[in-house]
Image (tube, rainbow, N blue to C red):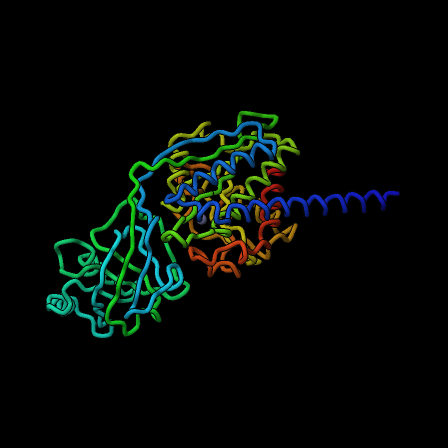
Length: 417
Ligand SMILES: [Zn+2]
């Protein structure tokens, strides 16, 4: 009889797990779909995703769901996005992308290839003063330009040189960023794969940008009430992503960060069914890919005192399969980290927890810098990681191995902390 009961319990647990996985995957798939256009700003995708999440939290049984509005200034690429290299049409997101702070650009331009082997800034500027390179796009590797910031910074500014803008090569798969899109520089900056631009003499571009000052976003905050209200646990995950690169291309962001966003909903569902000892907040923030704007706003305008946070868990990119789990921990969170390590070695959720240095790279940071005990969990360097910030971070390429161990690790932690 006892054996039967144990077996039934085991079956019950497995089934619950399977249901939970189905629920989880459904949310990742939905958020990665074309409906949300990469959860960016150009076509309202981020806010549409926020409304969807509000409904999901209510369905999951959250006691309260509130929206916390804030604004950002942000550059977007909602319209034309076309490029030809010596007459050959390139593909947006595959062969080229734009720097987030680039203006739009329309016209035909000669390409000046920087001599990176015998580089000398003065001779580059002398070359660019020649009539054949007036209005040229200056082309070199991104990292080379980065190492010679001073010279290439001048090439971005109006009035410093007659060049039309910059082309920077980036090894395929080409990336797109958003973090510094709160401004627009004077001249366009295009990122191109080395293969697409090698030996090219002339480039045509037809790219629209739209700068959106004071664009409205919102954080979605769900609460599952615990038995005690004097302290709380907080989960954070950003639901926004990079949005569009022109009308047709969007960045689905299945791993970054539909994976963490969906986990917050299934965690809320879990705690709504298994009433916790303390209040639980599920803070789905927006504006992360525009430089942690939503989490910074919340940290400046918290809806409960930050001192009440027993522990905060930031889940950003947990859709991968590295058996070693990356994490960052704030100084006051180190006591908790010992428990994380203990649980992990007892339960073998991951081969190891690899703790890196605390950095302003995700939504735990505005809390860590204010003394909140917290951990950032990101599963990186697995099969999904090469797609980070590319058009290939899709539902089809999504990996789910790290979801369950992360889920169990944090739940065990809360039960024992
Ligand atoms: Zn992210």
